[in-house]
Amino acid sequence: MLDIPQEAKVRGHQRAPSDSKEFHEVTKRDALRLLENDVERLLKTTEPARRPALQAEMGRFADLFGRFLQEEGPALDWNKIQKLPENAVMNYSNLKSPKNEQIRHMLDKLVVIKLNGGLGTSMGCHGPKSVIPVRSDLTFLDLTVQQIEHLNKTYDANVPLVLMNSFNTDEDTEKIIRKYKGFRVQIHTFNQSCFPRVSREHFLPVAKDFDVEKDKEAWYPPGHGDFYDTFRNSGLLKKFIEEGREYCFLSNIDNLGATVDLNILNKLVGEERASTPVEFVMEVTDKTRADVKGGTLIQFENKLRLLEIAQVPNEHVDDFKSVKTFKFFNTNNIWANLSAIDRVLRERTLNMEIIVNNKTLENGTRVVQLETAVGAAMKCFDGAIGVNVPRSRFLPVKKSADLLLVMSNLYTLKNGSLVMSPQRMFPTTPLVKLGDNHFSKVKEFLGRFANIPDIIDLDHLTVSGDVTFGRGVSLRGTVIIIANHGDRIDIPAGAILENKIVSGNMRILDH
Image: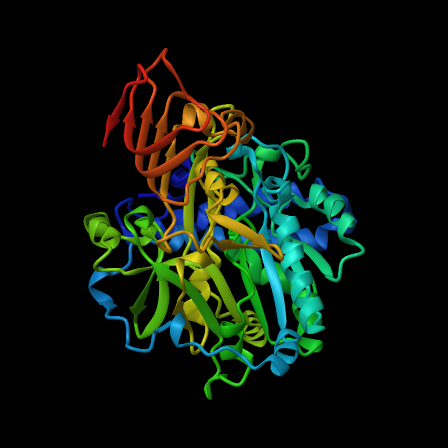
């Protein structure tokens, strides 16, 4: 049940009995009207020249808030979920590679977009996450630029790179991309929206004025579902359509597996192009027990759509997490037709489920931020399909455990792309868990390894407590290292740990 603002309750009560549907409608209308008045007040604190653009942005925010008030809850009718049709998810291995002479023509129909709104704070870094060094002192952004430059040089193409920044990353990113001036890549940037956080108590913005820099905590970027509107408003959508480009490939900048795939592109604009256009492709991959919370694909009301855990009724959460029931999860690598994006925006048929994100600010204020996910738009497009891609296309770096994998000898670097070592016997990556207290910050994590261990034959690694690794350590099979509180474990240089449990007082046992 929603907390309705006190002012709205009082006013609403004069008009209708408090238990009636009419009463709830009135209070919701009042809540929205009060919010719109407050937003109007905020707009008056900006200089007149900025107002028209900000007014449109705040209009989108008020629409989102109005929908939030109208929706009874995030859960969908579980009984209406249909079995995925046979052809809903294509197997990547069935896709055909394009002929070399066609590749340039195909690439000239493509735009690459990276979601670059996140900060590196969760990993203890300042500034945009995209500038954290991940391999050979190269950052996420360096690797992305290298990949696209390699495509452009190899095929004499002109694939542009577009970065969707947030108000958190925009300024730093603009400075950083200057260093790519001499590269064979056109780089464009645009900013996603900046919405006010709303107090849970009275449902009004906590910001006092429109000076975002002065009080960044009062504002937030509203999730990557905001991409469609802000991409159009930047003028880039129109520009690329006029250039004859047809598709964008969009992914998170911290997913090092999300490179341009020519086989998928061939299905969209090459010889393998379907007779009925595929307007939207979501790359999914096989779900493992580590991915149980990731969004999955379902058929619902005869449309393919994304189902996120937040939409699942409580009594069905275990079903949602089941690897047997829902075999795939969304990698957030998405291919979308540019003209179709333009159409759904013009026709106002874009409709994405609202993600309600409750947070508490540093001063203790409880706020709500409303977000949307880019993949949730899938149901608004015609001929949407999933492609079941290899796990290698999903290599996100969210924690230092992921950093351990991408910095290790598990991968080699080739033209900005990570390639798994042929010496690895299984195509899967090891499961790595590193204790938050000693490994969560990048600087501290790096300080605990003289160099990254050999993990070619590793299946599972758990490290907890005050543990350091000497140079040339080799980890194989299942290795568990736990230093009890107050103890410290130093794994000596050259140590080979295979199926071992190393506990507090440095005893080494067979696993």
